[in-house]
Image 1 (cartoon, rainbow, N blue to C red):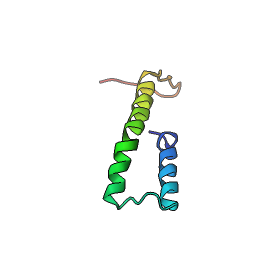
Image 2: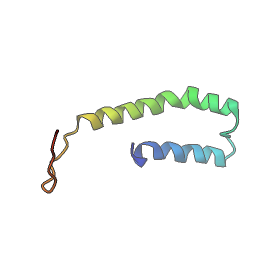
Image 3: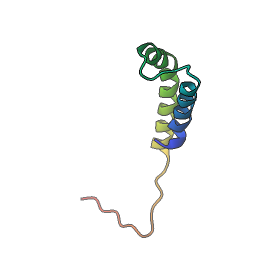
Image 4: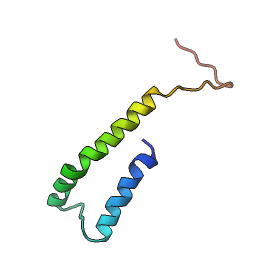
Length: 68
């Protein structure tokens, strides 16, 4: 994962904490976060993984690849 994939969510939840809307140690807040945001975050992560898995790996001129 890249910071670009998860960074926006980390920033969003920090902002919620800063505004006093979300407390990470509050069980009710954690449950609400999982129920509301987890499906969206999961879909974004799966989309990234699918995209990453189909991209071509470019060959490096200076690297010898050996399979034993």
